[in-house]
Image (cartoon, rainbow, N blue to C red; front, side):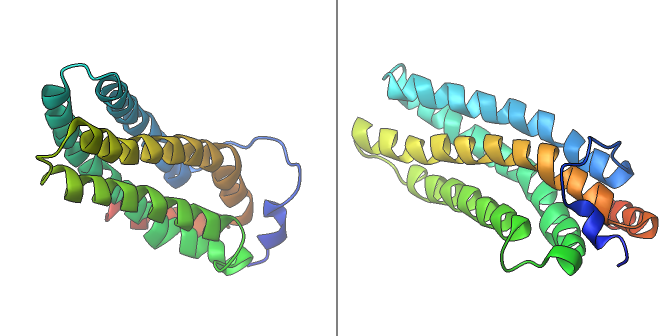
Length: 173
């Protein structure tokens, strides 16, 4: 990969290729869903219609998870390995991105596992709700890092052929 080193340094913003533009374009609807989840967590935290809002949160988290999974797979299964050829995957940006994916997914999974069996107290429901609030903070910051650092880095380091390959492969997911 001859262009590997061009991904580093204080380079100006770049126009993203089709595949990277698609990945970036998947963020706004996910962020909108996250904002809705966060709003519900605040209502529950403030003890407003806890049973109704907690039930709505479970439903909306399940919907969000369905939307998040293919997006994560496009990044983890295609983009990250392609970038990893140049910059490695055991440390650095790719390791951080994968760690953040894992953290957010584990918080969502723990919420769903606990929430669906929750017949407990208001305090238990608030505790479970905090898992979604934490996932919200992780993912909103994570998307910003991808849009401002990772995607521009990928645009600079991947060859035109690799950018086409990225676009083709993410269409299959």
